[in-house]
Image 1 (cartoon, rainbow, N blue to C red):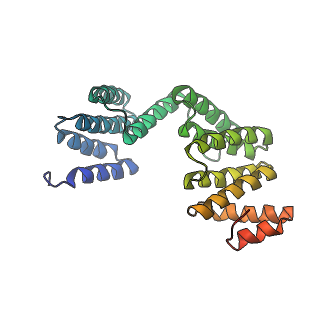
Image 2 (image 1 turned 90 degrees about the vertical axis):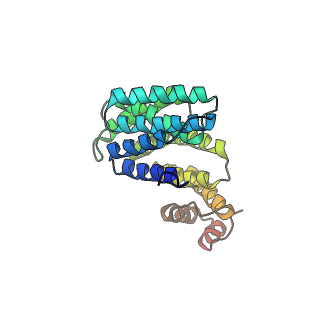
Length: 251
């Protein structure tokens, strides 16, 4: 019941399930109930309320109710400022989602999967520019650049692909070059380099992913590791090939 310390966490978890199921009205009810149980007597409670309001704003935007989405977003922003606390991780993520949804809503409809690659490329290029202008060159920007680079690779635009992927790696490296997340990024980037015909860059990036994997935890896909083996074999680097094949360390 409401007095159980797990109750608020349960409301949050269930609301997130409803969002995944696109049952936004049910999610909104739970976030509103969670907000009603918050007395907002401390700055931390005010921040929690701001997070709930922002979650509701996102639900309304996802369901296409623009006026209510904007009203809840404005209320969340005001409450966060009144708390006097810096934005926490949850608030930053929800705020970023809201702003990205708003930008996408103002853009032409996203092309359907399997449609014209050039139209998709035009869409994601515009989205990247919009995100950079609104949020700067952060992780959201890098994700869209990665998608844009993959489309350039499909079209055989090697130079454009390399330029974008070099930038993606530069942004990703800011959080640390020996992290599992950067290893996963290197795996993905290396495969796109290869698709564009940039074999040397593909090998170097996949090598980095493999080296990170030996120092942290598994971060390479089966495709990435198989591609690295093939590139090393084509290059004639037997020492590195057998090191990877036998799960050893690369020099």
